[in-house]
Length: 510
Image: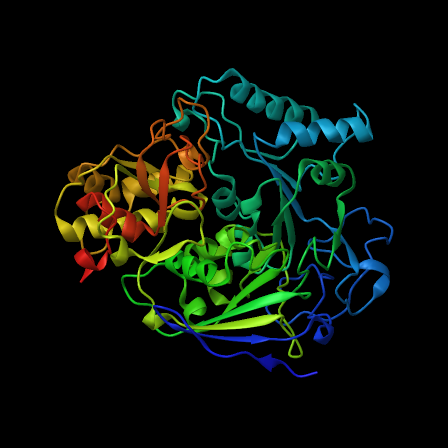
């Protein structure tokens, strides 16, 4: 069966060519997670190893697979996988640990103490007793289980007094070397899909599934509707081909807002989203993380970008664990394929109250705002703050609305204070932010991205209008249920802070 082409769709900013094919056309695409212990950059074999085989005393990394030795999978089949990394945090960890103990016993041990990563990050810098209790539960469990990767925080008065504390889990996972090509990473957070930037299968799961993984190291996933869309690119998969030179006023956030606006918040429901093309290949790892981070806002189960030299270079000083990348094979077929000419794209925002409520930033120039928020797993990385600083530096002006800065991790916080911004004459982001009149960079955590307790830094406790580099703008997402959130790139957020209105960053960058 050949792929049928649909008419070319023209949007307000670029040409999108979409191709569709029926589900009957699909078979497995490099459905392999049978890896050797030697790091490899070549295409993986198409063999699938049953996870029902007896457990070896020392399992090699990324030994994952699908049921009963099959070499191909079709929609509707189930896949058992061995989990390479399970991540949880202070919001979902206590519940997952409770289910684990209920089902496996009070004295049960987790399947592998070195494959569980526990990262407190959501409700940390607060006096809320229940939030503080959640972190205590994490600490007690990790002490009892002797968990190797528990990034604890005990002194919330000064995060720098906690050398183990990292910050936002999805950024910390990458910085600490837990994101590796070809592996399976599951997390009790919907934005676990961020790790797909590393050519890794990464998706969010609930606390019941997490409790099962804690005891067995395995999980059964479905290849069809209402479950996983892809394991090693098993269909149904949506493919996004982005070519063209990236304009210097665009960031990866603009790309993913364009895609979500194109297909809607339900357009990739229970499907994989694969990103390829010359533009994607030119992106840094942090840009790629932004792209994969928001696939869940399109309903996607996971996002993935094929590992390449950029991936390997990033990982060089972060992990010594061997890994083997997995790629779509030459016969791979896709449910739909979208092609974008990125050179024609303009800066975008997602208007309230949905990530797919796409608009050109310049079309919203009359929208008066009350504040700007730069932070989160989506927009709180080092390069995000460097981008914001670039706009402030180019303008030479002060912000006209409160501008809150929340670094994702301790490393990002340190980068803000230590790395010179190109073209600034040696000035760091922190100095540029200070000169622009921004708030002092806050303690690294998820912050007001998802509201949190009322004393959460920068939480919207009033019905205000905010331009934010976060990922969701549903009513009440950042606090007040009548608040209005415009999702934007760090460029657009910084430009808007300087004018007090939603502003196209080209006003300062060109």
